[in-house]
Length: 147
Image 1 (cartoon, one colour):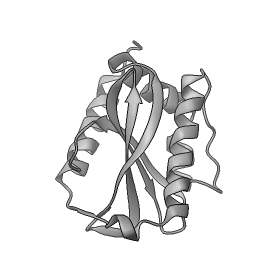
Image 2 (cartoon, one colour):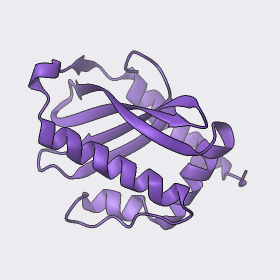
Image 3 (cartoon, helix red, strand yellow):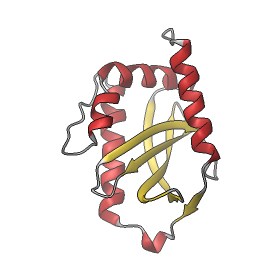
């Protein structure tokens, strides 16, 4: 496994902690927009398949916010994927689990997928902004309930 920069890992843990302290509300399955769900699933799958195959998926401003294009560059994608595969194994597949919204940012859709990595479950969380652009992408320890 690659050596992970301690301050960056600490920042990632803090972000996950802050996210876990937020209040989420589950969206009824009947209210899930199938086109947006497929967009979120497709982006997550393309990112992970590209990384699994030794490459990376370059995000564009057409499909992602400017912050995500800058933040989730090749170096960051490889670092995160190497960390998760070192812990759980290679990416295998995704299955939609739930759509939630954070009460403090209700216009953002947070899609929770159960990802299989080396046979283990990992949460793959894809956030879309109101324009349908990727605004967040996270890999977390699996939990049935949103944290």
